[in-house]
Picture 1 (cartoon, rainbow, N blue to C red):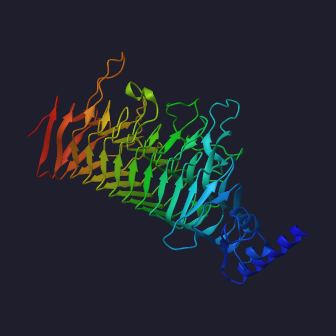
Picture 2 (picture 1 turned 135 degrees about the vertical axis):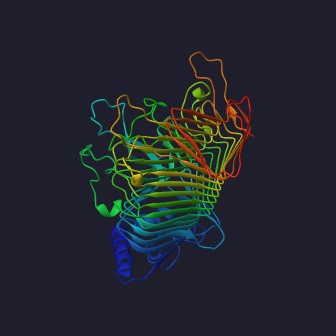
Length: 515
């Protein structure tokens, strides 16, 4: 009888949605009751589980209003498919509602849904298991079709138009938020992503991951020739704006089998986990014309294998995409492995990578404007690490990397204490492909420090800016001052100074000095 009443109530919910009405379901642990009447909005529900269990799946035009007085327990994972106009928020403007997850498989999932909104709500200690796009290289018999699983608090795949305002995702048992091939206009503002870390040595972790995927996660038929094996709608356009957000104390790890090794990424050979503990921005497949803006955000005390705070990466045939990082602050992000003192990986603050050969990854733009990198630590690229492949044959197809009015201050690394730039060098590779030539304008490199050790076989630390085969361009006023170690080291690369009214280089123990 109870199941019949619940079914009738759900039917009324669906009828209301079809009629274009917005159903408001209030959840209040003090005054609510878990009855069929609460699912139709006639009275408050007592528990969030009851409200979601009665209305999730394929549902539209529902607003869940959570009382801010006491935490709301969430004991299960709930999935929404083909939903629209779904909102979860505090019932009292300006007062935060708290969702406390209980158990090992708790969270929310959205598939092919749109117009999703989250406002003034905290998700604490959540995480439900999801298959990822990261290959499981420990399974040698999988032929590249075995994938890693990780816990995720809020999971979106093939969705559009998602809004976060005043959201906190903290203490996740894996990754806080994952957006797989989410298009439309997505706005993440005034939100905090903190202390999201994997548990029990499992792979995963990190605050937020935005990934335009190559094929559907876990698809056993996905091969290197399949390309995007889903609707092309999700490979064209879409934008994300992150504004006034905080990413701090997150950790992103990969499987023990992979460790800190570098896997050449392409197609379904991919390791997205362990990269960009604060924010990971990964472009795969045929993604075109995406726009991502990260503005006035802070990245503090994050740890990852590559790109401690942020990863920006382009693979496969991604083209004409744009990422802008403006007015952001990267502070004390550092190595995940203890070995980073004598061997390790790159990008204390950020890792940027164009990873493809032969005109495949082209016309993508990455810009850093008014960004500060302060006291970050890595084996190479203390503030930022850049890695690229020979990717295009004419300048009109060039990818762009541009820095304007950026400051690197007191970062530490073995190679490139401020920034390291390197090219994937392949012996005999001479098909005429060209290399990205980054631009620096009005940049400051001050008090960065090379990490010296006595470990046998390790290279001598050199260069606040260190480039291996990547040509550099400096324009405007650029200042190198107080760096311990060489100011600028170029190995098999050209360095060009254009339209400089003043370039000031003054370093301690410098091999290049101009005043």
